Amino acid sequence: MFWTSLNQIFIFSFFTFTFSVSFHTILLYLAIFFGKIIEVSMMALRIVFISKGEKKIGSLVAFFEVSIWLIIAANVLDNLLDEPIKAVVYAFGFIAGNYVGSLLEQWLSIGTAQIQIIVREDNGMPVRQALYDAGFACTTVQGEGHEFKRNVIYTIVARKSIQKVINATKSVTENAVITVHETKPYHGGYGLTRTRLRK
Image 1 (cartoon, rainbow, N blue to C red):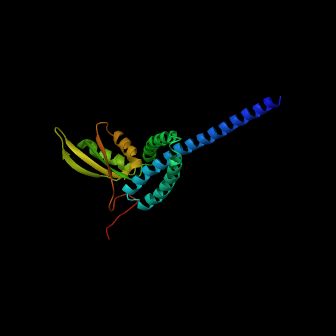
Image 2 (cartoon, rainbow, N blue to C red):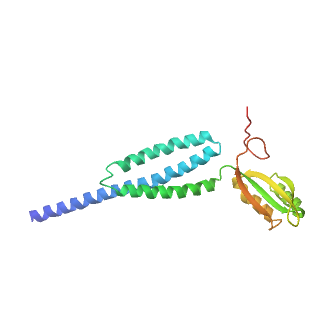
Image 3 (cartoon, helix red, strand yellow):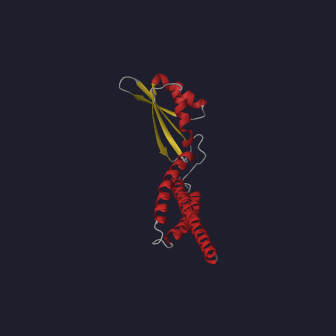
C-alpha cells in the first residue's frame, strides 16, 4: 500500500513537472515566433520611413526594433544546442515577419506617388475636371500618338489616394493608360503637406 501510494505520487509529480516544462517551453517558442514577427515588421517600416525622409520616426522605430531583437536573440542562443527547435521557430518568425511587414507597409501607404495618365485629346479636359472635382491638382502636356493627339496628365498624390485618382479617371474613360511611380517631393506642390527647401 505504501509503495503503491509512493508510486502514484511519483508518477503524478513526474507528469506535473513534464507538463510544466512543456507549457513554459511552448510559451517561449510562441514568444520567439511572434516577437520575431514584430521585430521584422518594424524593420520593414523603418526602411520605408527612412527612405521617405522620415529620419526621426525611422530612428525611433529602430530603437524598439533592436531592443526586441536583443531579447529574442538572447533567448534563442541560450542552450540552443539542446533546443534546436528554437532556431526553426526563429526562422519561421522571420518569414512571417516579412509578409506581415509588407502588408503593414501597403496598408499604411507611406509617401507620395506620381501618376501619369495618357488619354485621347478629347478626353483630356473631362479627365482633368474629374481630378479637380476629386480634389487633385494636375498638369497637362500635349502629345502625339500613332493615330490621335493625346493629353498626358501628371499628378502627385499621397499613395493612399492612388486608387481615387484611378477611379476618377475611369469614370470618364476606360481607355486611359495609367502608370504610377513612387516619388519624393522636394519643394512645392498643391496638397503636399511637406515642403523641403534647400537652405
